[in-house]
Image (cartoon, rainbow, N blue to C red; front, side, top):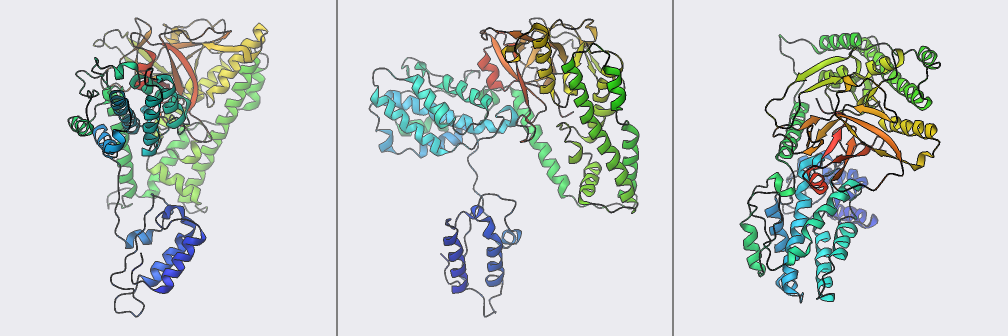
Length: 594
């Protein structure tokens, strides 16, 4: 209501609202009209009370919108901002859901006992899916906006199924419609859908409606307080929820305590990056000028950056060798991509030197690169060859340092079932040079490939040509080799040995060759060599095997141009089931932040 406003202002706003057929309280859906609204507010709301054009003193303009970077800043600066945030925590979400259930709806189902217990399980399922997003990539690959409409539809579905089938509750149909049709309709990632199905299978079971069972909703917690209350009315359920802990522990979601640490580190990094970006670029009297810093950085980076590969010399060297043809093609493609990156580095650094000296025009791209280098970040134009979250210095070391360097030799004497490990890191450029000018690698460093999926396809092509089978009929086996990469003396008979994996959400038990619980505060640990072995007519996955996804880097979603997912690798799940590691968000990474 525009009380006491100018008729012209009201007419212009109402005409715009009706012409675009959008309600006036959804401003984020009218971004194309926002400049017109900004003009209206500056014209009719800006004058003071002494002006003839000033609106009535009781005039208020209410606008609501979702956050948008295109919303006019002047409107935000002129108005009073109020925000509403969803409840945080399992307890708060459960209370909100039960407060939305009326007494009439609660008493509508004829199967009272089953209904009350399954309703509590559904509310818990909804709250877990919402709160699991706080674990970032360990929670979901893609953050999903589940809302109360999903819960309400499934609530009605439970009532219908219980009334229609009073003697035999159709749990399979209920699980499918809830996890696949309703909540699963929002899920776009197959691995996220797998997680949702694990949760629904855990919460919607015959034990959940067994009157003799005190059903535990968080079985991985010691002395879990999260149990379904017995046959209780609506106020009793709300009272039981209020007794739940206000702070959630990771084990309530099936996660390890390290997941809390990982998400808090990520949130802290985001906060610090935001604070740094807001700091004014002020120099002290004794500080080095930005121009001097930039010239020094450019000089150092130019010294570290090697020259581009000689493509003709590489092809001349590789042609007479007996390396498989698909692998030669992969090598040529990798050399071309790294050449493009190295040339970009040389050209950009030279242009920055000239721009700082005032000899060339500093374009917006050069200015962005300059700011990234001063902040020790990788410029956007340099990160298109392969994705990475490393700061600039580790990124350069990962790219260009020559020689196979022993970066860490660590002997763990305090952790049971953990053998002494020596970590070798072969840098990207060095790995290609050793392959080209020395010999076909016995063990490939998989993180060194810009497109690991292309390398894996080449392995399948090589095996298919050697054995005379169709490539579409081949699949993978993943035997774990209990030998350090440097100790491998022969090539694999079929397939290739690969190393360079980091396990997140679990730890590898070297004595039993299976997954085990990670050590507290150890967010990632190294994996042994894995034999990527093509096989024909692979048997079905046996029990006790966890299909572990492999990602390029910690951002598991990747981008529209470069998905992060590489392949799923079968690993022995050890004493735990595969569902246990699914709830943990266990995965292997080819690159970490450090």
